[in-house]
Every structure is written in structure tokens, then in C-alpha cells.
Image 1 (cartoon, one colour):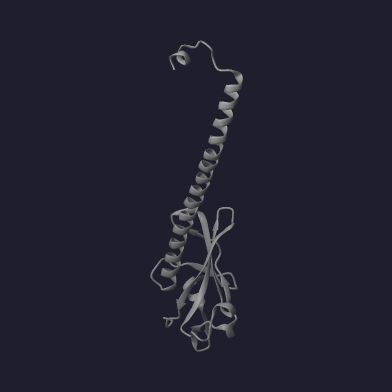
Image 2 (cartoon, one colour; image 1 turned 90 degrees about the horizontal axis):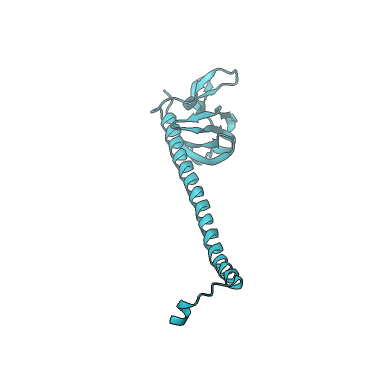
Length: 167
């Protein structure tokens, strides 16, 4: 052992190349796994933000449709603004009644900014032909579509809306 330590001979080029090759073989999988964990981390962060936006939009729309929150607006066929929670009803001679499949009502809001999330917008769609089920007379569904700043769809969800007596 003393002889090896006292040797003045250095490492040969072959030994350096072999050491570098062994280091590369060990380090490449570690670097790849680190990069993959970074990708997964970014995807999880993005998904958490989308989930938060979805919760916020669902709360916002639900509050409006139940008449508890700031009203959303859509537009009538003549272009005049109309409160969004009114759009589930149609005008008849006897007054407003819940829209049904026979009414063939199709209404969608323009893009609405998501509160607290400036990079996202959403629309709300009601299509009586597809979202009304006569087996459940007192409820219907609306489709909420959430878009990012590039107008790419990031989430869609349907929420159940009960028909309440119109005031």
C-alpha cells in the first residue's frame, strides 16, 4: 500500500477515459430522472392552477344562476344584454317558463374573465335540445368551457341547475 501511495507515476490517459465513461454511465440516468421530475412538477403546478380556476368559475356561475352573486350577462338575439340567469327561461304569453327541449333554446355567453385569474376566460352554454332531460323536469345542465390566454380549451364541465319559480 505504501508503495502505491509513494509512486510518482500519474494516471494514464486510458484510466482517465475509463473513469469518465463510468461517470457518464452513472450520471446520465440521474440527469434524465431529474429532468422528468421537473416536467412532472410543472405539469402538476399547471393542473393545480386549472383546478383552482375551475373551482372559481363553478362558484361564480353557480352563484349567478341561483341569484346570489354578481350577475353574468349574455346577449339576446337582438344584441341587447340580458342577465344570464334569465336565459334558462323563455317568454311566453303567460309569462316566463323554464326552457325545455321543445323550446330549442341555444344560448352562450361571450368570453367572461375569470376573477383573480387574468390568463383565463370562460363561456357558459345552454342547449335545451341536448341538456334538458324530461325525466328530470325541475333541473337542467349548463356547459362551462374554460379557455387559457391562447383560447385553448383547458377544462369543460357541466353543472346541474335547478329550475326555480321565476320572480
